[in-house]
Each structure stands twice: as C-alpha cells, then as structure tokens.
Image (cartoon, rainbow, N blue to C red; front, side, top):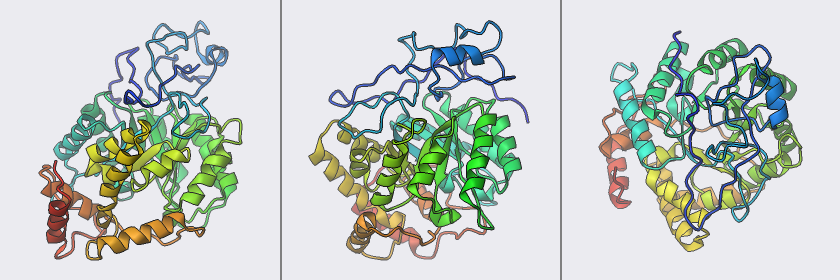
Length: 420
C-alpha cells in the first residue's frame, strides 16, 4: 500500500469556530506524541495526546527537543486538540479538545456495488463547506463492515484528497480481528488522517479485560489518537460506566462515540470518565443528533452521527445556538431535527408517535438493548432526492430501499422543507 502524501510541515487545523457569545477556546499545554523507535516528532495531526513538554522532549528522537515544525505549547498560533480540560457543561470553558458536529459520511456505491469515488468526494466537500467540525469515514453509516481492507484504504485516500486538511478527518478501523485492525492503524496512521474510530465487532462473547488489553496494544502502536466506538446494541459489549472510564484512561485514547439512546447511561459515562486522572476531560460524543442540547448540558462534546449527512447546516446551527446559550433558538432547531426521526427509524409510522417513543427511551432508567436495523439505503435515497450525485445502492446483504420508501422520503422532504 503506497504512502499518502502528508500535510505540509507545520500546518495546523483550527479548532471549531465558535460564535461570538459562545465558549472561548484555550491554548492547552500540549505537545506532539512520539514513541521509542518512531519517526521524528513533526506535526502531522491536530489530534495530540496532551503530553507535557518534558515528556515530549524525551520521546522525540535526535536532539531530544521538539522540532521547529512541532506544535509546542509556546506557539500561540497553533490551536490543537488537548485532553487537559475538565468534564464540563456548555456553560464552562472547554479548551481545545475535539468537540462539535462530526458527520458520519455515507460511502456512495455504483449500481454494481463498486465504490463511487466521485460521489464520496462530493459529499465530503459538501460537509466541509456546510460547517461540520469534522468528518468520519468508514463508520456504521459508511458501511465499513461490508468493505474489504483494500476498499477501506481507497475510501480513506479519497477522503484525504477531498478534505485536504480543512477539518479533522477520523477513520473507522473496526475489523473482525486484532491483526487486521492493527495493520490498518499502523499503515493508515502514516497518512494525513487525524484519528481512528475503533469498534470491536464480536462473534463470540468477549470479556472487558480482553477489550481493554486490545485497545492498549492499538494505542501503543498507533501514530494517531483512537476513539472508542461504544455501540453495545450491535457488539453486545454492555460495559459499566466504570469499565468505560477505565478504557478511556488508556494513554492514546482520544474519547468515545456513545451510540446509546439513554441519556442516564451516557451521563454516567461522562461522570465516571471524569473521575480518573487519565480519563479526565476526554470528549464523549453522542451517536445521534436528536438531543444536542441535553448532550452538551450534561458535559457531552457534540455528536458523531449520520443524520448530519442529510442536514448538516441545521445540526451545526443547533450546536452553535447551544454554545451561544440561545436556549429558545436551540430548542426550536432541535424540534426540527426530531421531525426527521423517521429517517432513522420508520417512514410509515406517525412522526408524533416516534418522537414520543424516543423521548421515553431517552429518559428511561432502562438501557436499550434492541439491535438496530440498517437505514443506510434510506439516507442515501434522501441525499439523492436532495440533489446530491449519488445512488441509493448499499452493499449486499444489507436491505436495499423498500417499495414505497422513495415516495415516503419525498413526502418527508417536502413537509420539512429540506434543501441541499
């Protein structure tokens, strides 16, 4: 696999731009990460590990000091991700840890189910121009589980070319076994990506200690930070908040995507993570976009979700309204997002019924354990009807668009006045 061109030395990505009334950003005491036997510590990612300058110096090769292109905490021009900020509500100072709306990017396919590179690059450019704070390729909505190693590498290369360093690029790296996951992280980690989102696909039951040890190995080998993808309804890994916090305390863990509906459970994850010295302040993103206001109030970092792929501006606008403490506007925008819940659930049921069911599950003391159905074909068809040059084909054996769904999507678009 050939090496993909790196960013020009010393180039940085700005932290997500906040509105004038929002939370101010800090320049954290951060430095680039280096490991014994690794290449010189030049800056090739905005995701860094929060090491202090002395540890950074010891881990760099050669002179033992940061290079002129490294992001030292003395350089006021470099705004980078760090993990020293405390777990906090939207009213508190947040630092420069990764936050905001990270869109899960669909992987367009041709009618023969081959990759559609042109369609993917179009979507990525659209999401960047729409103000998304970051993009995630090869997530669940990107059909990673149905793509080969070579196809995942190609998707990553196309994403690097399309994003061109404008926002952080996170790449999904969930394989059936550790060998392939480790190989992918080691090879793709040399490229111009900013981090990995790692899920643990399971066939037989897996104990927590085995998962913890696996992530310790991955973090030790990775050049880039790793987000844990917590999706217990799919993986069967229903870890306790204490176990989640222990997992996130591994050095090199950047945070977590929490794909659960129940806010009580997510809040417990945030609170327990804040109790461990090494886990303190690591961002936890919601895996859906239907409760951004509540997520941020309880210390969440934002959302890594598929719905922003359809309405990126609406969801980014909601996030910005929350940061500006404009509660009335944020509530109104969130209400518009909730009207799109049929795209993620069922196009035939009344919207009011689905909204009520979501709110019940969201506040329930009982965790949701039902395995979700794929909605990728519905998302792709919605994008197609909105004018994006992609088809609705998904990789078999996922369900293709059902009869009548195209018309139901057209009705939803019209009622909600959606536009590209």
